[in-house]
Image 1: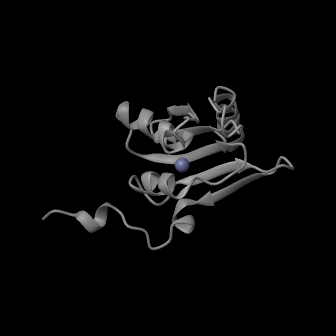
Image 2: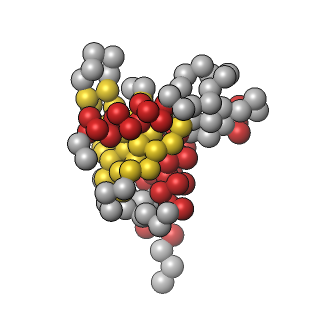
Image 3: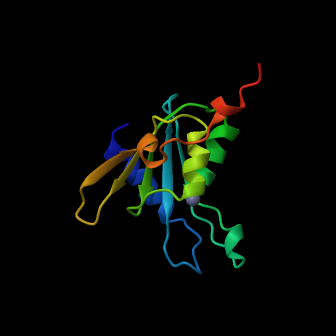
Length: 128
Ligand SMILES: [Zn+2]
C-alpha cells in the first residue's frame, strides 16, 4: 500500500471521529507488516484526559488482532503524534514511518526514531 492510499484510509477514519470538544477530527491508519491496515478515529471525552488518540486506538486494534510489526502510520489531518503516542508506537520499533499530507497536498514522511531520539524502550527492560 502506498503512502497516498494509507492517507486516504486515515482521512476516512478522521471523518468518523467523535470530536465535539476539540472540534478537530483526526484519524490514523497503521500498516502492519502483514499488510493489514488498522484504522481508528479520535475519541473525545468531556473529561479531556480520557480522550483517546486515533494513533493509540489504531495501535490497540492492531495488537488486539495479533499484529506486532509495523511499517507506516498515516495521520489525517497533517500532524505528528503526541508524545504519549510516540512512546506507545516506539514499543514496537524505531523504524516506523509517520506519513501525513500538508496543507498544500504534499506528502511528508518522518521516522519515529528522529522524533523520539534516545528513547526508552523494551531493550531497557530485558530480563535475563
Ligand atoms: Zn496521542
